Amino acid sequence: MKQLLFLLLVVPVASQSNLNSITQAISKGDASTLGQFLDKTVEIAVIDREDIYTRSEAERILNDFFNIHEPKSFSQVHKGSSKARNSLYCIGNLVTGKREIYRVYIYMRVDGDEYVIQELRFDKE
Image (cartoon, rainbow, N blue to C red; front, side):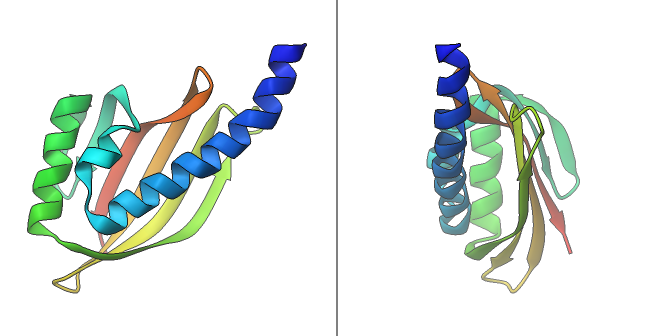
């Protein structure tokens, strides 16, 4: 019972903190910080490149993307969680220095007492 109460109280707070750190990392193009929140394996979709990668491979792909498409800003459009609070998602817009706009989809799941990114998509608008 204590564990359930802990999860109900702490996980939502931790998820908001993680989500804020994740969106800040995206807006700065900081693949290294973003990598700290990736699951051991993660689905990454960047424009026409989509696959399941290890954390280190995904971080390298994100770094390459951010080097080519330098982020200027990221804004959350929508976020939510499952009824069981075992997953969380966020949809936002990334604006680059080349004035490109990417719709970003972040899907996270609970791993222990924190949320980790299971899927991250960058779709060009």
